[in-house]
Amino acid sequence: MKDAHRFGIVGILGRPNVGKSTLLNRVLGQKIAIATPKPQTTRDRIKGIRTFDDWQVVWVDTPGIHEAQTKLNRFMVELAIGTVADCDLCYVLVDAAKALEALKKTAAKGEGGEATEGDGDRVLAETRAIVEHVAAAKKPAILVLNKVDKIADKSQLFAVIERYSALYPFVEVVPIAARLKGAGSNVDALLAATKKHLPEGQPIFGADELTDKPMRFIAKEIIREQLFLQLGQELPYSIAVDVVSWEEKGDGLVVLHANVHVARKSHKPIVVGKGGAQIKAIGEKSRSIIERLVERKVYLDLRVKVDEGWTER
Ligand code: GDP
Ligand code: MG
Image (tube, rainbow, N blue to C red):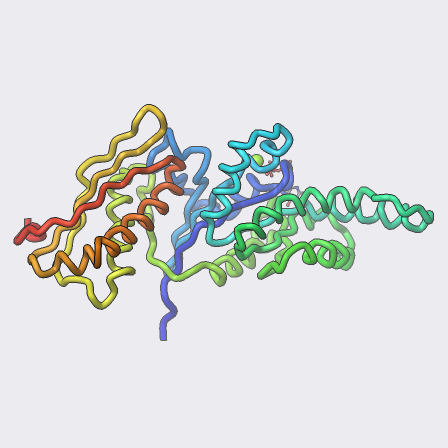
């Protein structure tokens, strides 16, 4: 039996300089498709997409967390935490070479008999601060140990794995060297691990022409998918989604009007649900997915219209 298609959003977390940008460029490779359904709003948020035969992944950078904490800027912190909350999976990226150096220093101090906090603990604490956000959001996370090319004796990596994997119940630990090209980077192993831990779902983006897919189209696809997912067997045979308007307000709000067209009067209550609960749930979920893609507050006005013959037109 063929496995179900997978789709998911992966948040890349890590301290500055651990290699986040390098990793992104590596995983995107030649198939780079900068996802800018709305360049002015998502440029700094969605970094890239890769489409495979049976899965699609969207990598999202989460700058804010570290910087926000140092500046004690609550709004930024909340934004970054929100990003983690919206991800299906997180990478917690660590500079393994730096981590190892720090652990060695701590060990050396330990031998000197002083029970002071060493460099190893300090460097570890930096990652722990990031992991706390992942833990709060209860997200599956992969511990990605980068820059392993800088560690000559690979057996020393175990000390790093031991200390860092204790921070969280990571679903996988993958050592990589993002800067290296080809098999030496071990990035294929990271991709395989990523796929394994993404939820089932249909691709949201087309395999190409990502840059000129208008956001309206993407919104329509998202709403359509939610109709399929949430109505399941009850889905009327003839149903269509029409995004009537997409307006970006000055204060960062996106106001979106969309109609769900059904062909028969009797279909309307199925889609609307008891007291409007069904359409509300479909709208809520669609809205949250669109919000995380455009990084803006979205107001979605979703209505069900009976319109015989609409789908033919
Ligand atoms: P970011 O701040 O997390 O985005 O980190 P960057 O991707 O900008 O990388 C920071 C530095 O680490 C750059 O000089 C990279 O070339 C270097 N770097 C990244 N990945 C690796 C790696 O796998 N091995 C080595 N030796 N250096 C790396
Ligand atoms: Mg960077």
